[in-house]
Length: 178
Length: 358
Image (cartoon, rainbow over all chains, first blue to last red; front, top):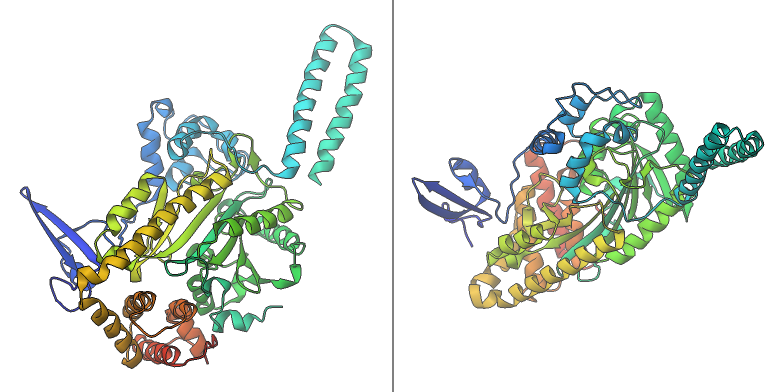
């Protein structure tokens, strides 16, 4: 259809205005819609998006959540040891600085990610090397626990064996990194 | 091997061909976001760290299947016009060329595969295919990701999945999107309702050039919003199922258009054809809208048959960066409009399907 204002160009914008409870609607072309900026442009076939900042959006999501209410704006939180990003930086930009940020800010991030994504459990693709490494790390943790117990029990022979196994597992993990 | 000059002067990317359901779906895109585990994300990285990421991704890309088909373009070595052409061809994002230093693109010769290095994440792998082609695009992206992953250690967490600079990409790091042409839904004023429904199913709707751009020429980009808690296959299946619904709705609306508009319909598409083949000055926005009408006219057999691939190519050829790069330098807006008009006329009136623009 043609623009209701100029009757020349095709109407690509749908506008609606409500004044004192009275709603008026019109189909306009882009130019006419621009000229009549007093209109509230609703998302029409020609989508127009307000230019909001992702950071602000995240900040409001964080504030709404009671779980993060105890966390003041960046206060009391160390910057990330991986990249120096502070929590205040993240709130402002909505972007993390490195992989370690997700550990550094895990607690306040959890409710945000839950709000953004629904739940926090990855079910998709896992990097191949991560599959093996995850198992190795798990074994290594178990071995270290057993070593502590053995030392506490003063079972030194067992401890020595465990130490050797730990060394082997650590080497394997390192190999995987190269 | 890809001649770099051709990238900027030819509009023959694979996605511009006519693909499955090409009457409604222009192209399908799969994007995977990945980061190296031990380097800060690009926004927090020093020049040396950016260089390290660049070197590692470059060398990993040299082992991709059919490695000979790829070429690395350093953003710092390209002109602003060339940056713009890459954006217009959907090969890089606007953000990627804002600060071109240490930013690069690994590009396959058919432009169906592109890897942005040091964009928001260290690696953004993209597969871009013509028509509705989600499964094939995902299979290719998955295979290339496997290949790269053999030589790179990605930032990954058991719960959060692939770690990305922005938490909205966490998990699979996957964004699947389809570019749709929905003129009949717009004309019959159903577009709002149909697209609004999609939003309720976790899909995002954008214009032709992504975030914040307008749906010029009735082109809409539909993609998944959520990236975590769902497998890649689920995300893709969901998008495919909903897209199929939209395709059906658009086709049904096209079938009813004649009833609704009567003679105004052939009048509209013939007018568009008439202007495009006769105008001496054409602005980008006008060209886009008229090409949209011509495309509708061709799909409804109201206009003489024009290959959809040719109309797709015109979407790129009429972009300001492309026009100026082909002309060999920046042009005044009125000069651009003159060139655009003559290019469109020439393309529409030649019977063959030359993609080259001289």
